[in-house]
Image (tube, rainbow, N blue to C red):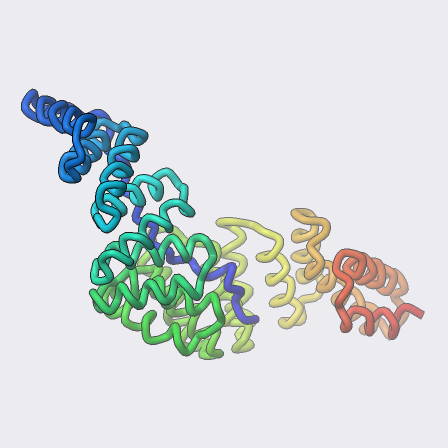
Length: 338
């Protein structure tokens, strides 16, 4: 019942401040922008290039801003402000590969620049270069140890690598820095669950729920998994029923079927598995659950309910067609398929 990394995180703090539009500017500001633009066209003064780029950003002209930042870098390849300016524009456009290069160059030219290190880590994280992201986040934290987002994200990155012990100190620090932050509580709960400390995970998930106006589906799904790991199946069922009212999904119905099965409510378990298959006819965990429920129905009938047996075998065979490597399903088919 361990929550999947795909469910949990969750907490990348993508700080993509929107580009200002063409807001009203004073005559003096317009004149200054025009002068900076002319200096940009005529000279090799990096301060003029930066000023022209900033003016273009204010005007919403990203292409001109990128050109100006690029000219500044040609003149002075170690100009951190230019690398950061280009990277910010690429990040806000969603071009994370180019943004990563810009932040990397800024971080190399100015290693003690927190923003350069942090955003380099963030781009690497988004690009799924998780180990590299961790190193960049750690460099950022060496500059600013109490930054909430950097602590949160390095914990998330370690979680994705299943290095839960490494993740824990950073997740704990994030919750100390912002105790009412739901994402931080969710992250810490997922890490506790990864460590098998499900009672503590439940406490964090519940605090995350208390600190979020909306109930995120992934949070409730993870909470149900920790209840299941502690064999608190009634609470698992109740959590999943709550989740399904918000966001029904094959996974939610399949886990609800499992909880009801463990509570020996076979008809309702079968109903939940069937609902999962209505949403996704190829969701093999639900096919397996349905097959096991029908087999139990067959066995409880002293092996007289041949219809339940046939329904079980049909579900299990279908599951095996979808996903071949399932030794337990193969064993059930060998045992009851004769």
